[in-house]
Amino acid sequence: MKEVTYDKLKEWDRDSYVLIDIRDDELVDEGIIPGAIHIFPEDLENSAELAEISSDKKIVFYCQVGRKSKEIDDTLEVLAGRECYSLSEGYVGYICSCMNDQAELEERKKKAEASIQKKYHKQLFSPFAKACKIYKLIEEGDHIAVCISGGKDSMLMAKLFQEIQRHRQVSFELTFLVMDPGYNKENRALIESNAKALGIPVTIFESTIFDTVDTIDKNPCYLCARMRRGYLYSKAKELGCNKIALGHHYDDVIETILMGMLHGGQIQTMMPKLRSTNFEGMELIRPLYLVREADICAWRDYNELHFLQCACHFTDTCSTCHEDGTTSSKRLDTKKLIAELKKTNPFVESNIFSSVENVNLDTVIEYKKNGERHNFLDEY
Image (cartoon, rainbow, N blue to C red; front, side):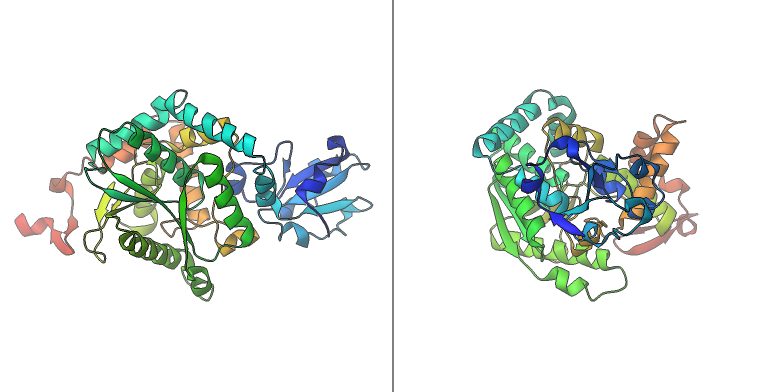
């Protein structure tokens, strides 16, 4: 299929073409080119929406980085006689193209910061500050490595750290740390563009994690997550940090609790902070612990920001994985289950979260403490 760059596309009359987004649901949830229609690749042949597009309009397909859309079979019957293109560098190319105006970048930064201070203060900064206070995540003299993956969560976390540091209630240092595990050039460019637009002075270091996990057939996402965590700890310690901060939010926490029960046969959760067992003196903190994902998305959309969902090699085929090693489908299924339960129980999310705050050991058959198993019969 022929390709067209986004800069060239901007020269066309907007009424002369239709954009078709063929990415997964979770990537689309992170943002979509304005005016685009979302159709899965497997649905193209029988798509009523595609068939109804006027025959005199060009059709421009795009995926995340322009590889999957280029492979679309333009001999499909529904595309017969149409002028079709693949958007070069895909959605990422579109985002990077929007980041070239310096004056616009400064305006984006000011708007993003003002929205944290005013419009979304209650939804974002307040729960961020609350988590930092009640879980004692930020302490005097800390040097925190704010780990930025390129997604909406870690980028917002970086801005919230800048804001809380501005309040000067506690003296601490920040290093905004980006690890490049082998990003393709489009994804790395997007991370750098977003950091520049938001005024986040990132420190980037490289590793070969993606090349390593590419050869793994079983649980590559889990291995990737473990390796990335180790590299981040190691680099943060080298830079003089005593903590790394990850961008897991409230919804990640409750999904993890439910996934552990349904798929792992265990009751556990993401902790708001953890001491590293492999890097002495290092801690992991999760300051977005009480922040809702919907509020993060609202902030992102209000500021017309566009972030990566996942920047791994699997993104080349528009798939996703997560920092904790879970796959997109399993976590997405859990997210949908919670949404379905909420229809009949509006408190289901807070109840799931509270369940790990209200564990009654008198009613638990077995539990583990420091790796040792305890049974209720031990003290019956």
